[in-house]
Image 1 (cartoon, rainbow, N blue to C red):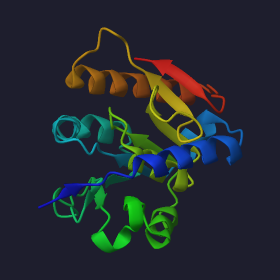
Image 2: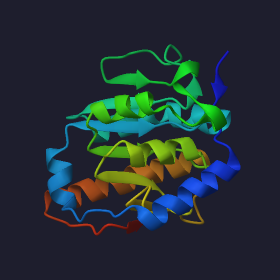
Image 3: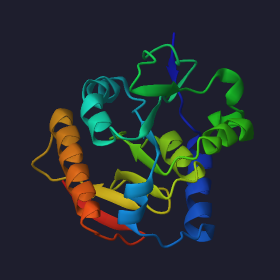
Length: 201
């Protein structure tokens, strides 16, 4: 039986404070990063309802990154067999031994994530799943995409703002995909993003 990973609330607050004050993001060309990126990490939600919806919409995000090597992170302990290792993506999931006190990932697991050399991370968690936010930042990816209103920068440097008209998860994921497509089309035309861009969906 798989179990979602929840980081201790106090530890989460400390890590958010620490990184907001001490993490110094580098400036980058969004167009250049999107064009040259080879490895992409897509983080699925931990909440069962959101996980099911994100899983159903995973194909549309894989299509966006179709020319890149894509990995899918499952925020569950021991869940690598939960999704099939299809040709389109590989699955990453922490095992129990990859977690230390307060459910924080061990340094060895973080290094494993870094070794993939992800250039782009995309967090599909609609709630405040801090494990995804933390791993997006620790991955070393230059482009870190998440929803506005979560942990914010520096965990994400491109934030997608939710429209009030999109109330249902299905609509939100479709909106995220549409926004990402427009961003990538813009990058092909030479668009640039600053270190804390926000796009509305």
